[in-house]
Each structure stands twice: as structure tokens, then as C-alpha cells.
Amino acid sequence: MRTPKFPVTLKDDEREELEKITRQQTAKSSMVLRAKIILLANSGMKYQNIAQKLDVQNNIITNWTARWHELANKPVRERLQDLPRPGTPDTFTPEQLCRIIALSCEKPEDYDRPITHWTHRELAEEAIKQGIVETISANHLGRLLKKTT
Image 1 (spheres, rainbow, N blue to C red):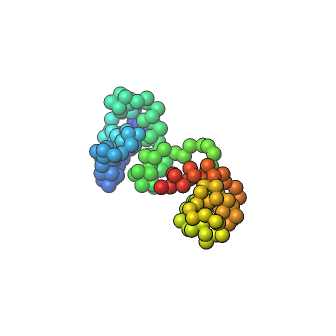
Image 2: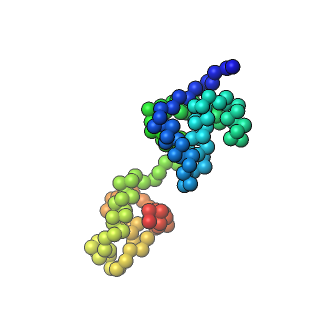
Image 3: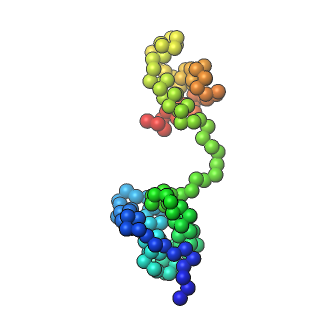
């Protein structure tokens, strides 16, 4: 019998955490699947049998057992997370977002604005004036505020 490419040996606390994930009602299905892969690999089951049992491709088993080894020094849940996907980086830093949110909590009158409540346009103009951001549209600012509430 051939030995697995990435044999999985779990510590007791890792096994407990993985079993907890598989029982959670609120856990993402992808996270549960990955936890099951690692638990079954730890039990000594062949990758092909794991793939059949979980109805996935063999390469998924190899990928996740390899990732388990690569991230051995990370916490269990972090080891089961998706890797960051390529794409456009965030436009604003967390600090800028916090400053915009803080500004939205202030009174417009404190900034010599002749209004009693912020509009997205006024808030965007003030964020630029304060030097929080170089540029931001009223629509983008509205989406950011909606996402944070």
C-alpha cells in the first residue's frame, strides 16, 4: 500500500477543533468539507477513498492536505481558509475608513457647512478637504458607509 503524499497527524486539540467545525450549524460548507478531509486523512483513509466518500476530485484532497502541512504553525481555522484571491486592492486603508466614519458622526455645522445632516456629496467633499482621502465620489462613500453599518 502506497503512503499518502502528505500524511496527516493531528494533535488532540486540532482534532477537537476540526470535529467542532464539522458539527457547527453556522460553519461554511467549504470549511466543513476541508475539516472532514483532514479528519479522514488523519484516520489513515486513502485519498481516493476520501474523494469518493466526500464526492470531490482527488486533487482537492491532495491540495488541502498539502496546505495543512504548509500552514502547520497557523491556527486550525486559519489553515482551512481560502487563500486571498488576486484582484484590485482596497482603495482606502482601514484608518481612512475609520476617519470617514468618525467624520460622518460629527455635526456638519462644526465644519462650517450650512446643513444639519450630512449628505454623501457633502461628506465626500469634507473628507477630501480634511485630507482624509485624495478623491472619493459621493456614491462610493455611500457604499462604504452602507457596508460598515
